[in-house]
Length: 283
Image 1 (cartoon, rainbow, N blue to C red):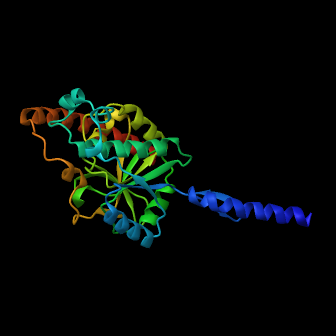
Image 2 (tube, helix red, strand yellow; image 1 turned 180 degrees about the horizontal axis):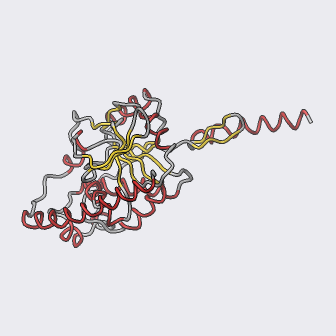
Image 3 (tube, rainbow, N blue to C red; image 1 turned 90 degrees about the vertical axis):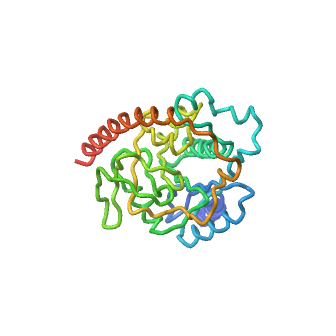
């Protein structure tokens, strides 16, 4: 009997290391799943990785580095694998650069990891971030949510502000808000597994930048919240990797005005519907 117990303990010890590397911790003979955190980083951006690693480590956040798609290195058939010039003309006011296409493809690949993973949600980070709040506390707050959600932004674009049309306090530290229009940028966000599956299915072909596409959330059948105050912000000391790959594309002003008008009314209706649904969920 004693020998059997010793073998069992040895087996658990051998099991611990590979499980730890897969975001699973063994505590008191219970398997506790940890939220996967993915840091998108170009292989050439070593400095960004090292700084992000140091900041996340200091904050007590375990993460997985994801090798970003280098848009400038993609062959034409790879660039057009998901990017559609026809959709781009219909949906956006200028052609996407190789950097923007590579950025979108990087996020899609991480969505696929979340969609096929065993965790209920994952966190996606870009490598130009600063941790300015309690990120582990933010994730624990998200863990405790009792209602359905799809995307929760943890940072805004260039630390910009936008009108809040509904707010719900989750704790003394955080509140969940709905903006008049979802915040631009994809520097940091939490993504539910089911929402990742929906995004992948809806973006087999895309024509907008990834953050702009998420702003058109009603097309994807998802909701977008922000957890505030944001625990993450963009490090504006960095130049954009996307812009450094290729210069600006020509913007079509009339197309842009038309698209903005259509989007304004669709966004307004979708936001109102999201608020009604959210109010019903938290009653």
